[in-house]
Length: 200
Image (tube, rainbow, N blue to C red):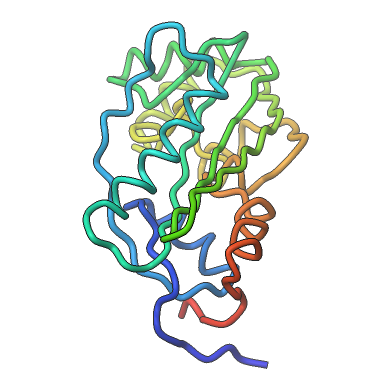
């Protein structure tokens, strides 16, 4: 049975096409706008607190602009041995990150927040990911694809970087950037129905 398009019921506080695609998987008709916040890690901030703070801040910031729809926001961090690996600053940074992740298990933490006129709720997904051993030549070739440039940890599980993934334990969609089980839970709690729109 086909899903009929309908008016937006949600605003996604993100310019990420990946998060939009995932939200469309839930059939949620929505608009999207970037929050444009300072996403730097604060001194002494734990990774769990970092992603939660940013997801909440993004949702609240977009609501504060006068957005009338409920606002959904997310933030993702790659974490290895307690250190947060964000988006690479340049080629050398990306190659170094991938080298540290190579052959090891790391965590991908994604917080998702929903702000409406009544409250702001947040959920966090934590997934363990193992990358296989990567040669320098592979890391160099991957950088040349352009994919690592705007990705936390310098890789994308849904793109060319899938070739590096040996195993995951947790939420695939959380690693991509929007954990759908947690998102659906937030929507249900807020009384928002999913599977009603279509992403064609």
